[in-house]
Length: 256
Image (cartoon, rainbow, N blue to C red; front, side, top):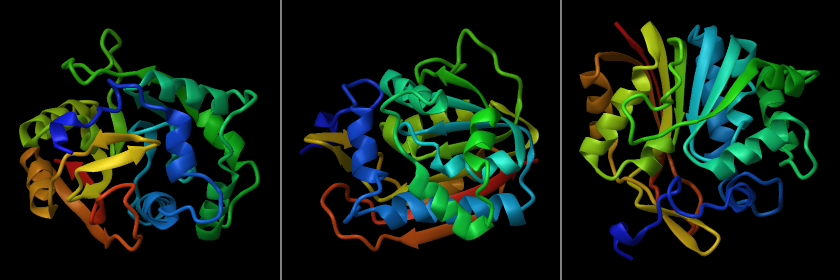
């Protein structure tokens, strides 16, 4: 299928629960458990604990209604703000946040975090207490939370969402610029994404992924005035036609 025929997750009818069941569920044969769950937890645990990334406010901009990657963050930031481009994702997140019937069960990912941190008691409640806002954002506006203006954050965490909303290199850089404007001077950027990918499946629908390599993402971040502190590429291990990415990339950087 030609890339221009792919759906865009924040524009088309993206089924958020099917996404969670496909890539995040606790079930036998969950094909991308390593790449989609365990590796992000491992890398973010490292960032927060050993790279001294902490502060008052963290803004999380992610693809899908995911929260598992924030279990470590809630130990190092007083306040977390979730930004999502898709209404269905916001509804799903609020179900979990307010303990509504039918909310997605993240217990298995909490177990992965516990393996790294050794801290479990009360962590679910601490994360929920740290999340102060779940807000809609817009890729077609210079201020992505317009009309709201957020105070500058100590850290912006970007989880695969640049891959799904960006059509090409110029679009990726424009979106990256908008995201990093949310940082205060000297703030930290945490980013993970999928290298050399063109699509991912949710049910029977094929969704767009922007295809880029290591050199592009390194240059894009450095050209925005960031110093890269950590640049880790983890090759894909799982065989599946759900998506065609070749590796997962994890980056931490700070702005001078």
